[in-house]
Length: 124
Image (tube, rainbow, N blue to C red; front, side, top):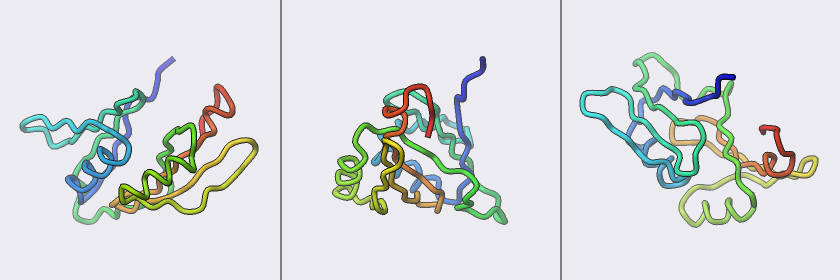
């Protein structure tokens, strides 16, 4: 079966987005000479994020996709993130797991969730 390997985010804020995901989610920033894509590789494994410069008329921050990051303890992650400059909304409890939402610098929806550890074999 094929596995999800990469997500592409079109953005007008390549540098700001790369710094955001490196700082808050520990992605390694890969910039190859002559490549128009900035690759973000997750330190803990999982799908990479590719940042691609958006066309002038492309709108950032659409809400049809949400990036969900699996964490063991949502409240602890949110507290540490707040100390590091990233504020999440209220921590919600749902069917044995918790989650909280925020946005990246381009306005894309992001979430941290403990669902993966609460319900093995399922994604958030």
